[in-house]
Image 1 (tube, rainbow, N blue to C red):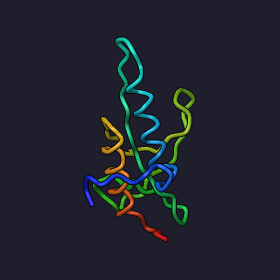
Image 2: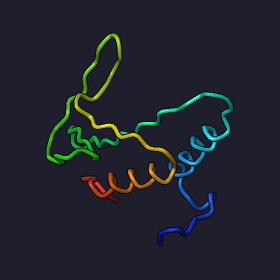
Image 3: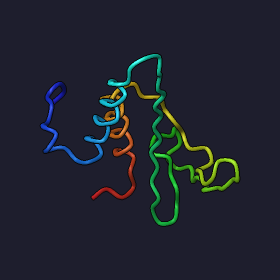
Image 4: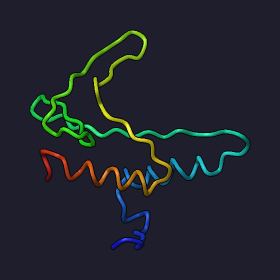
Length: 101
């Protein structure tokens, strides 16, 4: 049900971490600004997939560069403004998972 909040102790660690992150951002004083981006990937049977990408059949590659370290080539990234945006993004990615228990 939209608009109904679950008590923090009944939510999982990931949704609680979303609230924690944005709670700390809200408390920062001064001219500090934050840019929060989210990506969501799945590694299943040695295949890497972008759960937020347009092409759910695309197989992505894990790469490494000295200047950025390990990364996933062509992994999508979206800007989120609050914990609700982040939760909606995670819900969308969960629908695209291959291995759902």
